[in-house]
Image (cartoon, one colour):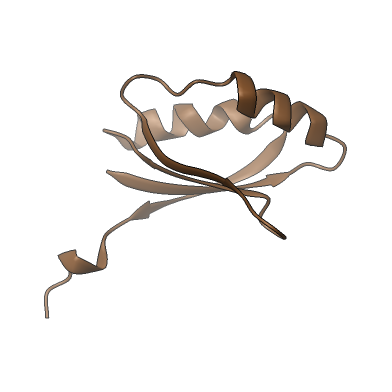
Length: 82
């Protein structure tokens, strides 16, 4: 399953957030495709594969002490029927 999570840094937590990003390694079952810092809001976006919603949630909760995560389940456009 493909997920996208945006992270908005909580004011005053930027330094903690950068530390978390550097030290947090995704679990083996999570495959991070992109972890990007953005110019503007949201502050970061993570695009990743996870086998279940629960595993995706456990992964993004690691960043919730420093940011507000918002996660969406993604479906590639090619999967839509015409």
